Structures are given as structure tokens and as C-alpha cells.
Length: 609
Image (tube, rainbow, N blue to C red; front, side, top):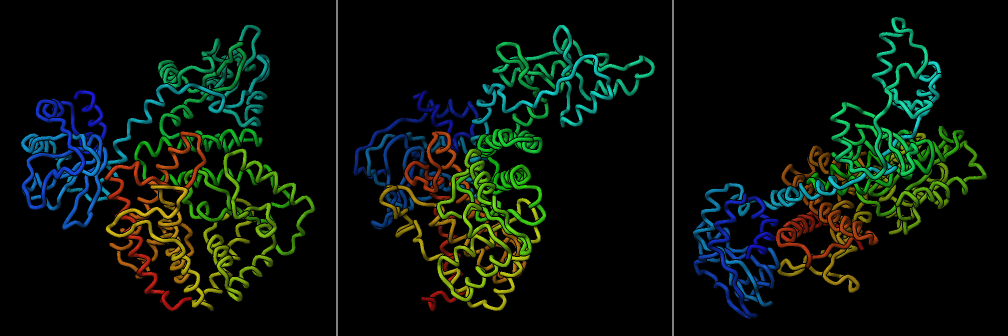
């Protein structure tokens, strides 16, 4: 019983309780067994206990109509007990059941003593989703406490001889883009930081300070590779130091750990990643810095940060990474004559984990594309491979000449999208309008977006055919609000991108083109559609919440795949999630289905063949 109660403590709403209420549960609750076919309580009967499923399946029915299905860790009859109302449904065991039975008196006492616990049973879907995230607050902390220092956290060593003049050493440090100097003495190393240079400025004449060794801290404090990061944080705090040299097993210098990066690691690592990207002077260094994004995403998600905020942060980091790649790989002579853009989910600032790479190059019309274009673009894409971006299955990458050409060539494509409409052309247009410049000349990209917007003003009728793609995939929500899996290879799984995310994103995209909205991010587009009067605040809020739910469940599934080392895809299980997540997902899918009906009416899709 005690072991089972420990499991109960980790699940909502019981995770909201403190230890004392569990003593009451332990004294009064029972574990019960029921075979298949057992009727737990009939419709209109008064319940006298709360059921919490340990193992098995219970179906809720109303006049033989299936209303809901309850699995492990699911709870039912809470609201009826609180309101002292009869059961709304017949509850039937359909797979032999082992469950907790918490007496009504115990349950009501828990509700009276713990308002947050009671409120859970009356909370909205969105509020429950927030609770679900918050219960994972501590999951990332245990990983942080056992994390150890490795070379990805270190800054490059900037080393000088002890007799080097101070001004010369300072210039060397500036040229090296470093924030500390390691001083090589006859017997070991010393260190000079910004605090030592302040001392030099104040006392250089009084103390006749000329060589770098005169202002060094010697002997310096250092640590070995593999030390626990938490112990290092204590060491740096105790000694009031911001820079700590790291040694290998042979006591040779590996690099310098900075306090700001260590603190960043214990928060969400975003500062660490952006600093390392900004300082990267080689592709190897950039690849190493960019490889930590998934770790950051995992930490942020575990802390309950909303998926749209994670996506925004990841997008900003990726833009810095793309800009650095552009600077390191694209020849300097091209920089003012071409623009590197990212498209699709990356262009909407909505990609969280690396699912694919969608990118393009735009060249000025009067710029002669160099002969080594293939060599340069291949190197760019191969570097993205090493960072961890899977190649686009549709070949929407700068190694494809279709996505690496002049402004005029792109304009010809745009003309064809309107003059010779096709599904392939519409998909290319959808990808292109969801794009942002990530390096080079931004005006080239702006030119093309303006060209598309002007074309739409002249041919608004084409949007009816453009938006029709929302009907390409069936909703995963079937009769009686049950999930329907349309892919035989993925039993009990749904493709959340095709069946839910695409119709929402594409529908909002289509409306944005109609209203001339330049934003590429879906949430910002929805807000602007509200501002333009197309939808009211309530409908806009519901749509944004549905988007948040879909993206949250998607990244939750993808993080599990990433942790296992599996290929990341867009399928989510509708069996291995709790009843709370199912409720959340169903409400989101209902909102999307309602939005699809609105689009169908607005664009008269019933008349489009």
C-alpha cells in the first residue's frame, strides 16, 4: 500500500498535497479488485467514494453511448462527490480493474483543507495543462546536480609569458576575444582577470607595474575535468572567483570555465549557447556550441515553460547560429549580394527540436553566381548535418538550384504559382511566405514577399484553392470524440503535425495573406487577425490555446524520442498519455475542427473542386 501511495503522490491532483493528507489516505483508502463487466456505479446513483485507477480500464457510458475511457492514474466521480450530485454516467469495467477507493468523507476533507486540490476538479483544460507542466519542476534539477564539467562548457585558453608587458598582454587578450589571461610562470600558472586590470589602472605608477606577472593571481585555483558542476559552483562562490582554469588527467590546461556560463547552465543554458556561438571562430566550435540546444529545450520544458516561448528562444539561438554559419562559410564577397533565408517552421519561429532544415539563397539580379556555388552550399548543408538538422525530404535546401537563384528567377516561380496553379506550387508558396532572413541582404527577401502580397491583391480568388489543402488530412477525432489512427504503421498513434497542426497553421497563413499581414509567426498572425476584426478575442484565444496544446504534446513526445536516441517524428501516442492529456488534446482538436468549418464557410470551399 505504501509503495503504491508513493506512485499516487507523483500524479495530479495528489501531487498538489503535502505529506500529512497522505497519512489520512493511507488510513482510510482501500485497494479493490473488480473483474471485467463489473458495474461500478449506475447513472443517477449517488457515489460514496472516489475511484483512482491503478491498473485496468473503465468506460463511462450514457444510454449505451461511449462517453469516455479511463486508464491508469485516471480519476472519476470527483465533481459528483463535491457537489453531492448523482453520477452522470454508468461506469463499467472493461479490463480487470485494480484501483484505490477513497471514501467520500476523506476526499471531502482533502478538498476542504486544500483549496488547490479541490480547484483541480473544476479547472479548465488550459489550467490543467499548466498544472501538468508544473509537476515536472524538479525533474531537471536531479540531472543538474550530477552534471559534470566537460569541454563544451569551456572557453579557449589565452596564455602569455610572465614577462610580457601589461599593455601588450591586454592587447593580446583583446585580439583573442577573451575575458581572462593565463600567465605561464616557471612554476605553474597564474591568472589575470578584469579585476586585476582595474588594480593596474589604479596603482600602476605607485607600484611601478609593468609586466603581467606583477598583477596576476598566483597560484591560481583550478579544477580537473569531470568535477561535479554543483561542487564547482560552491568553490567559485566560496572564493569569489569568476574564472576557473580546468585541467585534464595529466594536469594540462584544457580551457577556462566562467561563472556566468555555469550559472546559465543551472538556469536554462541559453546564455552559454549564445555566447559560445558568438565567440565561435571555427565550424568545429560552432557545431559544439549548437549541439546543446536539445539539452536546453529539455530543461525548459521540464520547468513548465510554454512551448511558444521555448520556440522563440530556440529561434533566436538558431538565427545567431545561421548568421555565424553564413559568416564562416559564405564568401565575404557574396555577403551584400545575397540573402540566406530559413523557411517553414523555422521561418515562423516555431521549430523547437530539429525536425528538418528548410533554407534558401536569394541573389541580386546583377550578381554573377560564382562557379564554386555547389562547393559552398554543400559545405553549408553538411555543417547543418553535423549540428543535427535532418535534411529536408522535399529537398528545400540551398543545394537544390530551385532554392538557390536570383530575385528574377524567384519572381518567375511566383508568377507560375498564380498563372498555373498547382498543389505543388501552393506548397512552395506556403513554405516561402513563412520565411525570415537569417544572413546577408534582407532587402532581397523583402522584395519577394512584397511581390507575393501584390500578386494576392490582384488574384484573391486563388486563396480559395490555396487554403483547400486543409482538407488533405482527416481529423484524428472520430465519432463519440474517440481518437482515430489513420496510419496502420502507427497503431494507437496520430500524426499531430498533419492532422492538427497543419490545418491550424495553414488556415491562419491563408487568412494572413488575404489581410496582407506580414508576420510569419502563427500566434502573432492570430493576434493581428483579431486586431483586424476577422475573429473576436475569445476565438483568437481559443485558437492560440489549441496551438499551445498541440505544440506542447508534440514536443513532449519528441523529447521522449530524443532521450531514447530514436528518430524524431510527429506521432504522439493516444494510449500512453493520461486522461488529462487526452481531454486537453480533444478540446484542442475540437477547436481546430471548428476553425476548419469557419475557413470552409469564409472561402466557400464547397465550391472548390
